Image (cartoon, rainbow, N blue to C red; front, top):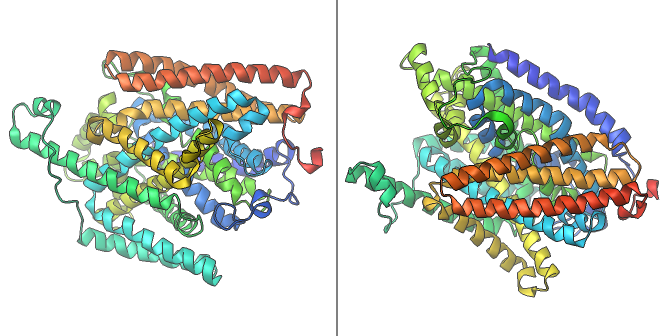
Length: 599
């Protein structure tokens, strides 16, 4: 089947969602009020609470939520066939993910910019709030660990991306200073920064950068065994470990600084530039699909799974998290974006629109990995051998899970080459896009984790962790230890199934909070209640499957993490069920601080 069909169907569905379904949700369910005084104005402090132009905020929110996950998840999930992945991305985004993101942003805005974790206390109870905060902490721990490993691997595989990625940070700082200290407009400085980024991509291709070899990393017993006695091969694996460790340490040192800077100085301008970059990437992939008209080589549904591979149901719904629905988005919406929303009516554009943008990226990832990657593999060996190489890459679940970024980056390179962009430049461009979004998520997630640690410090009376430097240090150190604790970072992708499960669990619980609030306000609740029930069922089922896999593979640390999260989930669901019973009994006061039009 032609990839153009997938592109047209997917984008048409997203456009319909924006024009029809989001209008219904905004007008009949969330009932946005243009005169509502948002927290950005009420508590304006120039650091976290900053009234922001909706286009700038869209850029920050979009690139914060559109990290590596909407690319990596679909790139793995096409192992089961393109059809299940495509349907979940499109339907999940329109009817679940975008409603979730929109709702989290809206409910936080209505309650003084409070995070979804803090809101849990008012809507369900104090004990539920603490449970929710611990679930969020575990999720952010895994988000940061996984994304740091992904970025480190991309730097190692594509050293030409190093210069443009780090150079773009300097440019973003200059743009932030220019916009907020000289009151210059946002559009032209950001477009200029984008142009500088593309020049740096060209320079990066000419001058690839790598870290010097780190001393003290000898081969592990597993590496020696894998190398079958080849000392040189084992030494090369150890050298790669040293490179990965170095990049992970550098990345977390950077996130410590970035997450305590004012949002206007780095996060907002860089995210706005990255937003433009994402639109350019989507345009390049879309143009490549139209010009090249590649065939989708993956089966619609893969009925020839390798022995021992998991089935797609229910694991598809946790493998593709961001790109369909993601609990992390609710943390961004209620943690940072709600503190920058200038008008409540902007929530539809930022929240629902941001999720649609991420869904579009996930569709492009499916196309790049099923059509573009096959073209890349065929360019020197012919279509028949190229197809065989594609099938070998996706021949087993293990190989599919190990190399999703390879498929995406090289697939984008092949599609871009079809419209005249040199393939080597296009591959670096795709790497920069992927790294930039993952790094943006790192910044935001560490900042959010600092908030969570500080809230837990308040809860348990631990004053030292309420200090932002101490809280940030704890966040960075714990994430780095998790990333490095799995075979010096080489086993980082083992966290992905547990990350996906926890992420979707959090999305379901966030929808529970929004549903309870809507119920207490006598609003239509099916919009959030149906996706909530589906998600919680799928994630619980998937978590039980993961337990058996972790136990059979002796992955005791992941099993312990999963068990702790599962216990928190069940406990919180019981708390939620009790809250639903109270709301149905008429306890309208469950909804804290109702909006003026509902008082």
